Length: 230
Image (tube, rainbow, N blue to C red; front, side, top):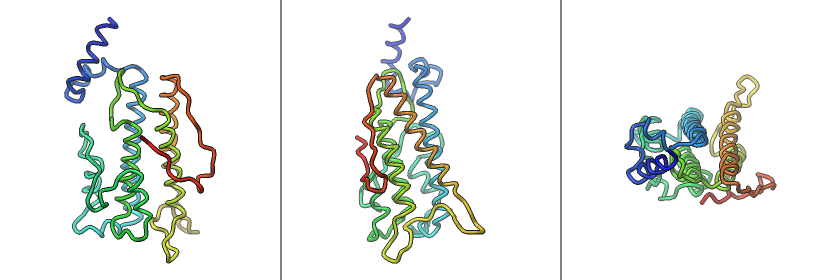
């Protein structure tokens, strides 16, 4: 039976799992793979929620691109509903940069484009790299626990910069939480905490599965550059 499972899994890999009916694809999954699927799906949903929330707080960023809508931006970053193919996150309006470089661009005062788009393209690509650009996982797949751990720390670094980085006029590059006396909203904190937790959980799952250790970073977030996510 185990040999048959290996043969089926190998066939799925060679033929492209996305084209297989879901019940057949599930034959190539372990219990750990199902858990990883759930975590990856949760992270994508939280990224989508974060994108919408940032545009609600920073609507003028969307207006920097003529005729652009939030839904159009969402489709550019995440693709259409239930899409299997992950869209490429390379855009001319971001000078062709993506991942961590796109995050850095969103806090660059000389950048005149949509900062929400730059930040979310960068954050999404960075997290996708930690998943090997996969949305579904199988027995033969192997993620890197250090990349997952580093991506969790990078979310924390991104959050610190989002809350602290200002332009030459002293204005935040992007608004998030509301801290006024009559208008108090820290929902961004809760969302970011969940995103970090998912990445840390994925790192622990993979480390346990592969019996490998994780090199942990103990420096202050405020002093850190973004960590590599190969």
